[in-house]
Length: 469
Image 1: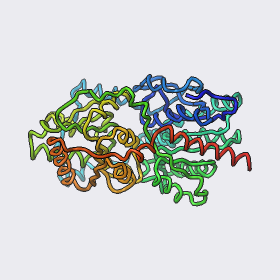
Image 2: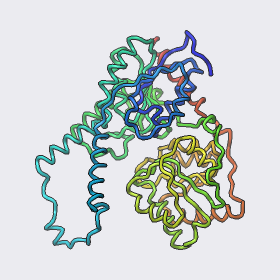
Image 3: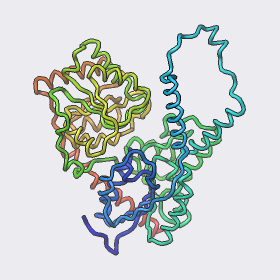
Image 4: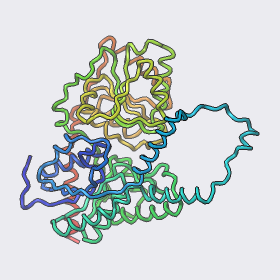
C-alpha cells in the first residue's frame, strides 16, 4: 500500500456509518479510505462513536490504513430510544401472554361503522407531531449535526483539507458537510448511496409520511445542498439521470455515476466450505426489505404445495435482517426444511456462505425500489462468479445481470415464471449441467480500487475548478 507524501491532498469524509459498525453502506466509504491513498488522496474521517451499535465487525476496521485519521463524536438518536421502549413494551406483552395478538373475526359493516376510530385526541396529535419532528426532519440522525459540526470545525482549523465529502443515507449527513463547506469555502462532493426522498423529488419514489411543513423545509434544504455542491455522485446511471431531471438548473456534468463494487481481497480467505450440501443451495445475502420478497416467497409456497418433498432437492438460505412482514411466512417455510435463516453474520462469513452456494438471489419485487436501483450485494455476487437469479423488472439491475453472463432475470409480476425457473434450475443442478459463463472483463470494471480511482478524478476536478474560479 502506497505511503502518503507531502504532495498528497486531503479529503474530509463525513459518514454516519464506519467500521467497526457493520451495517449496510459501510463498505463503500471503507474501500475509498483503503484505496484513495494510491491516487494521492488522504482521507480524514468524521463519524459518530460506535457506542451501543448492535452489529460490529472489527475485521473491517483493520482494513483502514494507519495514516487515515478517524474522528469519532458523541451522537444522539431518538430512534434508538424509541426502539428500546418498543422492546420493553413487547417483553411486557409476551410476559402477560398478549403477544402475538390473537386474530379476531372480521367485523360486520355495521360493527365496523360503530367502531370507527374517533378523531385523535389533542394529546395524541401533539405526541405524533413531536415524534415526527424527532425522527423525520429529515431523519432521526439529524441530532448528530451539532456534534459533527463542532468537530468538523476543529478538523478544518487544524488540518489542511482540500475537499469535503459526505455520503448518505442518512441524508442529514449532507447538512453537516454543506455547512462546513460553506463556512470554510471548500468544494463539497455529495454521494447518494440511496435517493433522498422528499416531496417533489424526481428521484424519490414515495417519501415517508411527514408533516407537510417539514417536507417543504426538507425540499428547500435538499435543493440548496445539491445546487451548492461542486459535484454529485449517484450509484447508478438511472439515479444520476433522475437527479439531473430533478435539478435541471444544475449543470449535467456535475452529476456522475460511480457504482458500488467488490474488493477481491475480501475473498482471499473464502473457502466456500460452510455447510456444503448436495442440494441446490440458493442464498440471499442482505436485508429483505418490506414489499420486495412477497412474490418469491409465494413461489416457494406454491413449490411446497405442488411438491411436498422439494426440500430434499433445494435449500434457500437467508443471511441478514428480514422485515417483520415476512416473519410468519419464513417461519412456515423453515418448518418444511426449504428455508434456513442465518440472521446477521460478519462480512467474511457471509462471503463464505455466498461462495459455498449454487445460486445467488436478488429480490427487487414490489415498489420499494425503483428500476434504477442497483443493490450493493450485486457486485460481490458478480465476483463470486456464480449464477444469479434476479427477481426484478427490466432496469439497471437486470442489465448488469445479463451483461455479466451470470444473470437469470424473472419479473416479480410472473410468480408462475419464478416457480418454473426454480424447477428448471433444480433439474439442471441435479444433472450437473447448471452453470453460467461470466464475462470477467466486464465484472472487473467494478473492482473497488478502480472505483476509488474514479472518485479521485472527481475530487481532483473539483479542486482544480475551485482554484481556477
